[in-house]
Image 1 (cartoon, protein in one colour):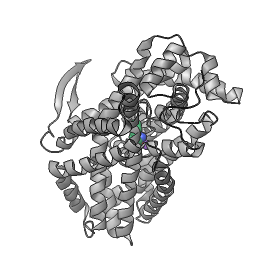
Image 2: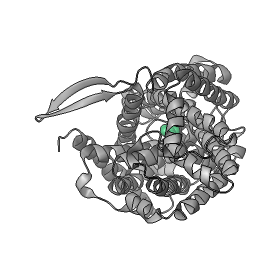
Image 3: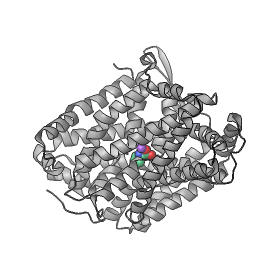
Image 4: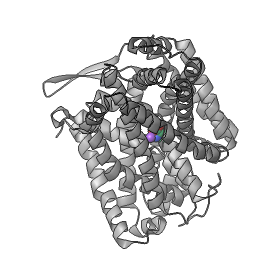
Length: 463
Ligand code: PHE
Ligand code: NA
């Protein structure tokens, strides 16, 4: 059954949906996570696998997620339950919604801590703290920040409050203006950074690191990480895009909007990579620097370029804003559910969700100081001993990006591709071209789920 609107409201236009979904997609995943994970995993081959996952798995699943959201028009938990009932399916499909809500809490808990780092860098940049620093100097500054739990706590708390404030008012007010300004500005500044990188003489080294594949280095885990990054960066598999789809007008084209969001997200990630790696090579740093990568490379660029004080401040400000428009979408599925099923008003629901994620975030804060020793166990598979575990931050990140989101995506692909009737799917998707529908349906039924399964099996050495 087609539903025309959600009790939580509706985007004022198709463009606003595109802005909101792009706001959800473009964030720390593009500018912070993509470069450092690509750097740790050898670049080229990782990037190409990531791009393949975006196209073959990400885009079709994004369309499926929006279609589900728009058909159910409720929080992901209730959308899945309602659609299962409507299609005569088992109510256990509601699990997909719960899995997503859990993933949302865990992601938000560490996302807010990293956004806190960015927030603190806004003030450093503005205060001229980067001036005259070399690689060791900026690394020292970064290490001093992350090993100071009290300072991290303050920034994390501030960022979480910013989220609660927006979500309490409803994601629509404010978001529209924020993203309309943010996207062009972010693009502009990234282009400027890429231009600066080009002028530093190591540009081609950066380009070949990013795009020249060395397949001999690719392991099952590399592929899993690339697929995980594709899910993370597109906000897929946890219901964020589903709930944004639930506020989308029935008339909008799901294909066109998805293609726009995916292109914008991919462009921002690649620009970030092109800006960062030449600086990495020009300053003798290693690509595998880890989560601090952008906080170590970019300050050096801002320290040297003319106008660096202004550009640096603006850049970190935009990074915070990009993180902000993403994190509110992480809260939305749980908030909508609390409003629907527990009778809370939006502000109260936002405080509860923000509060829980804030508390969980303490684990990430301490992962860089008191609890920086990895915890876990050794497992021997096929005579090869592997350590499974890490810091709480590493485990939260790995579990969500590489396991929970792809699993959520797999279940969504199976639900839409195999369990819903083709008639409902076609009706909701509203694709006018038969050929395009068939192509998408085929990829969603076969390529995407088989791809995800193969990557899972490969990662645990079963194939
Ligand atoms: N896509 C966001 C980013 O790249 C992160 C995110 C993941 C947001 C999952 C919502 C859901 O920063
Ligand atoms: Na992203």
